[in-house]
Every structure is written in structure tokens, then in C-alpha cells.
Image (cartoon, rainbow, N blue to C red; front, side, top):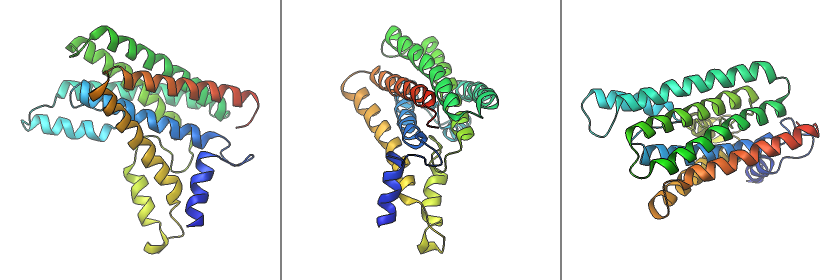
Length: 239
């Protein structure tokens, strides 16, 4: 149990001089953003994800089979935008990967611009969102999340991918001592799961009881703070 809480502490409040520096809590914050934007896209833009591409592949299959409420065009748009974002993030990683702090704040700066654009589009579109605005939102958010995923991959902090929780949950159980493993790092992995859960819950509550725009505003604020923090800490060579 002490190891579990040590994992949680090191993820949220890493020790100075640690291998990954201040990256873990910043990636946890980015995981919250994933929950926020996918809550928005699924509930407001009509059964489409902008961060979790596995869902979109399944949604295309559902739509082809004739299931109602799913759009092949929306899911394909999200996939295409995510690929463009991943390519952009990959290029940033190739150029800036030697300086993880600079890579982080540059990528999140681009994300903040896209999330700010998406928030503006959401304000202009009203509710329900017209198709034209909907596709523009999917593109902006999909590119943003593609950049985030490619960046997290390049940063390569264990168990903090910011999006994919299936492998996180599998590792939590399969690597545990109960399964004969060396240790599951359950504390860090659980923090990642709860971060996405918190983002999604906050996003849904905001949509249902306040306004559709708030998940995107929250996501913009979080990413902007991550970018600013990354820039400041990078200047202090803490990465």
C-alpha cells in the first residue's frame, strides 16, 4: 500500500531531479483535457470522438451496419483531423525532441490556439450546432488531440499517454504481483484513469447544467496553463 501512495505522490508531486522532471503532473492535466473534449464531441457533435480513435472506427462500423445516431462522415473527419495533428506533433517531436520542455510548451501552445478557435466556433454556432460548424469543430479538436497524442508519445513518460486507458488498465492488473508481475505502478495508472474520468464528468455536467461551451473553455484554460508552466520550467532547465 505504501508503494501505491508513493506512486500517486511521485506522479502529482515529482521529486526534484527525477527522471521525468515535472512532466508527470503536466501530462495528468492533459489527460483531463482528453475527457473534457471527448465529452463535448460525443454529446454536442453527435456520437464522435476527437481523442479516442478506437471509438470512431467502431462508430463507422455501426453506421455501415445501419445503426442510428452515428455518422460515417463525422467519424472519418475526426480520424483525418487526428492524423493531421499526429503528423504535426510528430514533426515537432523530431525537431524539438531533444529538449522535452520546449517540445511540451510548443505543442501545447499550438493546442491552446486550436482549442481557443474551437471555443470561439462553439460560441458562434449556438445550440444545436449546425453541420458546417460541427465539422469545423471536429477538425480543430481532432488536430489538437492528434498533436497531444504524438507529443505524449515522444515524451514517453511511462503510463501517461493522456488518451489510451485500455493498456493502462491492462497493465494495472496484468503487471501486479497478484498476477505474478514485478509490480503494476497502480498508483500512477489510477491517477491517469481518474484524470480522464474527472475531465469527462466535468464536461458532461457543464453541458447538461450550464452551457455547451464550458468544456472547451476549461480545456483551453488547462492547456494554456500547461504551456505556460512548461515554458517557465523549461527556461529554468528543470526538464
